[in-house]
Image (cartoon, rainbow, N blue to C red; front, side, top):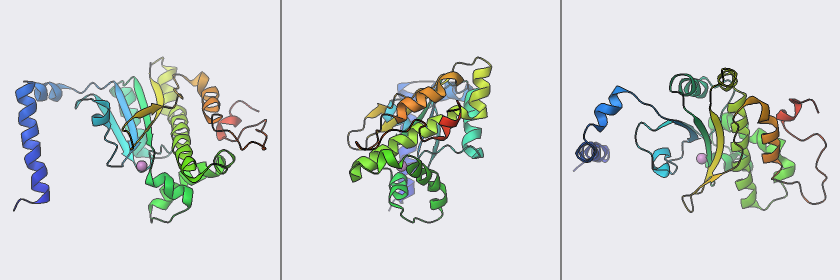
Length: 235
Ligand code: CO
């Protein structure tokens, strides 16, 4: 009987042979260099494969994935990947991609205990707390969807504020950070319209994106909104 993992190795052989037959020289071309224009920062979820859902070949997208697509300022893994992508590969677009139905976001929203990952997901629990007035009044499923989207918006901000991106923009390098969310139900990507292409527009772009999640009807929006970004321009 063929083992579960032998099946994968057999598929791989068949795939490599088909690629070489259909596009002779494909692998030797890739061996020479990779020149991806895109970087993907997404969730580890097995249902959200970057290349497949964007129709890209090997060599076309540089990928970093972790539980719930979080970019933490001190995470050397994510930062090193971003640095290599920006400074060496010179990617032009970085997409932070969340997805609806994310188990990590759900655990943070509901305060579920998973184990060690609770400490990682604490970053998302903090967002839930920071934006509670925009989230708490919604029905359950809408809360989850909103937190998935708000998490992406916050992570786009974190990428944009990283030293890697700040230095790249200081050098005049053209690289834009985008925020997308993927629907497991229909397989479609949605642009959250929070693209940041330079240091000057980060705060305004962030605020505009967050304000699309309004407070409950009777609660007035604050003069000074509710994010760390709002301390940047002094109000
Ligand atoms: Co997920």
